[in-house]
Image (cartoon, rainbow, N blue to C red; front, side, top):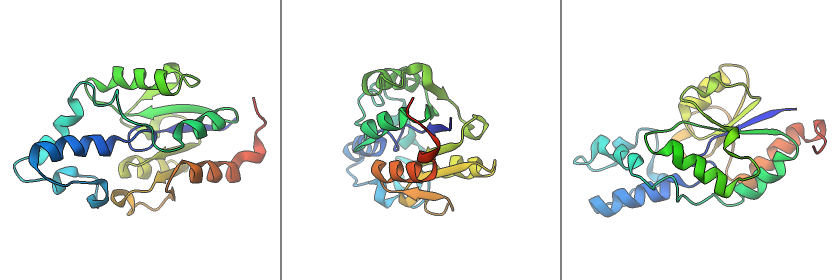
Length: 184
């Protein structure tokens, strides 16, 4: 059975909207994901904020209340019947516990037992990584395995398969491997 590794932030759930909302309110700015042409968010914020943009990621409650991206939950549930699914996410401070609670609430059929916290996702065994971070996508492809990008301006320099939403991802996976798997 093929194993699919799914990133959480900006792949399963919408981190950018809430993260940027908090920054924009504090700094009277209009940062949005469409403006990020590279991974380093500090390049797109006001000078007085700089690397403090990442401090928002340490605020209690941020990860617990993120909204799932459109169709993420239903597609994951359908794929779960045909593939081994693991959530593979990196984390900061409070996020470990909050991400576990988020998965228990929104993806109870996956469960927290199927969460892998890793900063070096290429070291995790799996056939496909669905992610948005350029460094994870590049590192995973260097292991001769399949990486698929959730398409964002900041990851377009990475030469991998890409999709714009969960329905496209589902079509991609089923076209690639759907005939190999029976429902479990």
